[in-house]
Length: 115
Image (cartoon, rainbow, N blue to C red; front, top):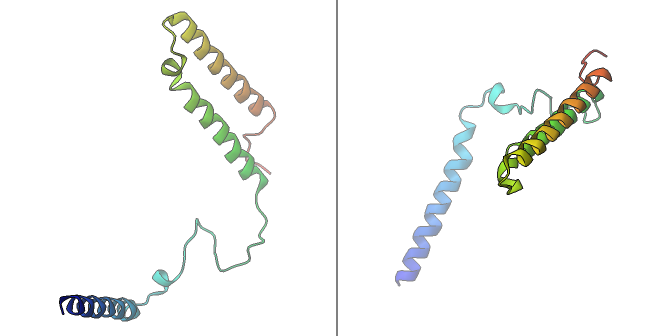
């Protein structure tokens, strides 16, 4: 008897919540609420729009430099070296590599946004 009563209460409560969730959003429909927004692009339009290759290259460059910084931050703990000179030499080598790659990107105009 208790099991049937619990099942009846659960089913009726679930049905009530589904009914409220189904009918409540239909009361206030605004065009701004109904329109999807996806990073400034219209998701209902054509999916085959031309993509800016410069934007893609700048984004990839940002990810590479961000990864190098993420490798530089835990370097003192990751090296497990007691010698400070060794740790500083490794950090200087990584920063030098980062600076050289930034200079290369700059000379190759990889950071320019003009098309």
